[in-house]
Amino acid sequence: MIYDLVVVGGGINGAGIAADAAGRGLKVLLAEKGDLGGATSSASSKLIHGGLRYLEHFEFRLVREALEEREVLLANAGHIIWPQRFVLPQTAAGRSTLMLRAGLFLYDHLGHRKRIPASQAVNLRRDPAGYALRPEFMQGFFYWDCRVDDARLVVLNARAAADRGADIATRTRVVSARVGDGVWRVVLDGGREGEVCARALVNAAGPWVSSFGGKLASSARSGVPLRLVKGSHIVVPRISGANDAYLCQNADGRVVFAIPYEERFSLIGTTEIAFDGDPGGVAISAEEEDYLLALARQFFAKPPERADIVWSFAGVRPLFDDDRTASAGAVSRDYRLEVNDDEGAPLLTVLGGKLTTYRRLAEAAMAKLKRYFPAMGPAWTASTPLPGGNLGAQGLEGFIRGLCREHRGFDSAFLGRLARRYGSRVDDVLGDARDMHDLGAAFGAGLSEREVIYLRDQEWARDAEDVLWRRTKCGLGMSAEQRRAAEEMIARLF
Image (cartoon, rainbow, N blue to C red; front, side):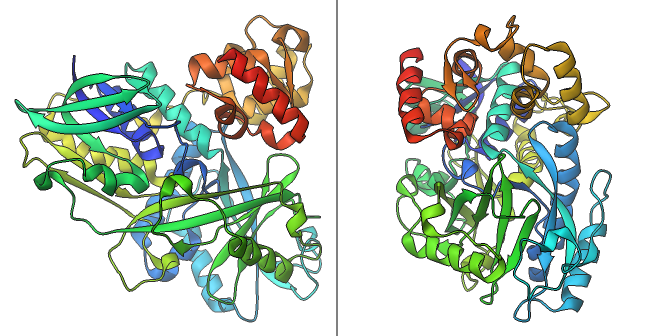
């Protein structure tokens, strides 16, 4: 079989490009050496946002595009993307009041807002949002962005690609790729083995984009500079009173978020440090934990301690480095696409990008490849919900209310959690079940045997980590003993 497109890398950019291409009528294979979203794309701050702090680096086009995409994605994936109010406390060492007012004005007006409220000043001594903070924080601002389940965003794009005919090959490593007879000959190993041919190849390998490029002929390698930046997060029990998200300005110029996470936790991050190791073995350091905990002590009245950390994760972002003198935090989050056909068949290399703009990146990628596939269909993703995104006119809350009316044998909280994972595809998970007993074995934290089977058969889950920490976050709600038991039961199903 000859594919039109082989996409290397199952992060958000690779999955987004695969979905876009498949929906335009191209025959697509996505090859991912591990799990979908198993690296950078599931180690983010879980935000769909314009990037308020990018304004001070004059990245107006990037912020405008991201704000526009915030509205598009909220409309198309309202089950896994939710509006979130942020509190921005003023600090003596932080940005000035004038700078904050100007930045928030631009943030409100650079992109057309339909579903997101405008920013406003707030007296933190009077408003409940200030109760979580130390008493010296008296003034601040509210603004709005969105939270996202980042790992599910990747999986749903892969599902959208597969629904339109793409082949999704996880646990499949691309061993080599060379051009012969005008097509790419791609050798695969792992979940899928052998050689496949493709009219075009996409290198969307994220932090491995350069190492994969090293497997290609020298004339096909990208010469674009790349900067690897490590970001780490900690998860702690919900900080007392912190039911809003908080943007905390540190004296070193960095900003760190403290965000409500799942139902009972707070997510704190991210750090931004230069990285030159193996992206596959990245983990938070003790110094990074110290940094995040110290910042929490500066801002919150009842800050977490090291013993409170229940989970941590780290990822490496491959950033397009257009300014080698910039600090890790100042390197652009914009993306760069390069096409090289010197070998006789096109290679598209993807550098940079962020969760929020993945869909626009995919459209730009297809525009780059248009001359090689003149018969491809038009752009389509802006107006098409992701799988499960057909929630109806009343949105997610209205959908959940209807779900509870239709499935009276289930607890409303359980149905709400399912709706926030699967949206309008909840019935595909529940099947003919009438109550919890019909869902098979209970693994803890609301996870059932039937849901695990759905994740295995429909979402490419292959082990317990895929299920407990990416497709769901049920691992957070389990005790260590429950996790061990769940891992054993899930292994038997796989």
